[in-house]
Image 1: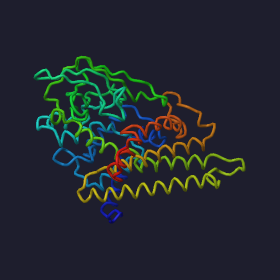
Image 2 (image 1 turned 90 degrees about the vertical axis):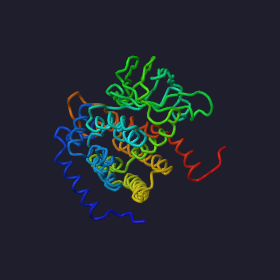
Image 3 (image 1 turned 120 degrees about the horizontal axis):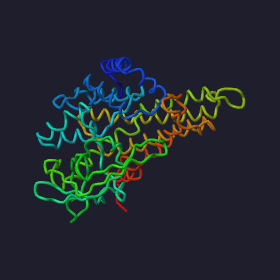
Image 4 (image 1 turned 60 degrees about the vertical axis):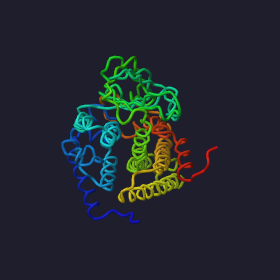
Length: 394
């Protein structure tokens, strides 16, 4: 197993890094350097720039409008975006439902949805979790009643990220209440402008309107918007979650936050008058995280090596999700501890781009959810026990 990048791949990394430096508008670059939060409009500006370059969907094959990157090139590309702090594009169309439409959709569905996902003309959100169905997703209750040429959908989804900006939502719905609960679920594509759909944003402690409760009251959805077979949505859900988990806890994001932690430790002075970065206690903390990050990178490279052989991501994505999200939270904790009472400072004045430290507190709070979304880490441990360690169920 060769875990080194080839000379061509290293040249590709240099090309991507140079292009990002030239293509990222200065106002966005300023916010990127400050690790600040981007608005929806800023995300869509960057989406348009990437789309014009042909790099907005690095995992899509050429027949569907993608660049045809190899698995190694996709990894390099995404890592360079994260290291540069570019606006993170919404993954729901590009990374989640888009590949599912390519794999499970009809020709009409591909022609209808894929071009507008690429261009950013239509924005998507995800309708999986419900108030009583999160980690135990198969317990979902939102119903879709068959009415001949359409379904009538009733129920509620929660934690629907940025649903207030979305044009479409992909939902898991219950179309059959009989038998095993996983077998009666279908995958529907729903127009957010449909009568009876309402998204209610909620303000998080990080001062971000990232999540919504989304309600469906007798919403009519054409049968043409059913993706995959009726009652076959669980298969699609598992495929989508595998892709989502590969996005969470990536080494590029952890490396960027470690870099910020070092900047903070260099600027903060201890009781002895020396920068904290020179203190043995903090040096040990940095060394521990650097080693854990390196081990995480090597594990990702092993998974990447398997992908280059044509093997799809399997239950090992649960390992990457657990370790990566744990690292993100540990680095956030390190930044907060290094800043001490300065970590209590909160958001800047409107319209003012702050120093990096001003965003540590909000990001720390937001990242508490990292071990929960995309399937809680407790659920990931069950997956590892069952499918990798092959331990019997209790």
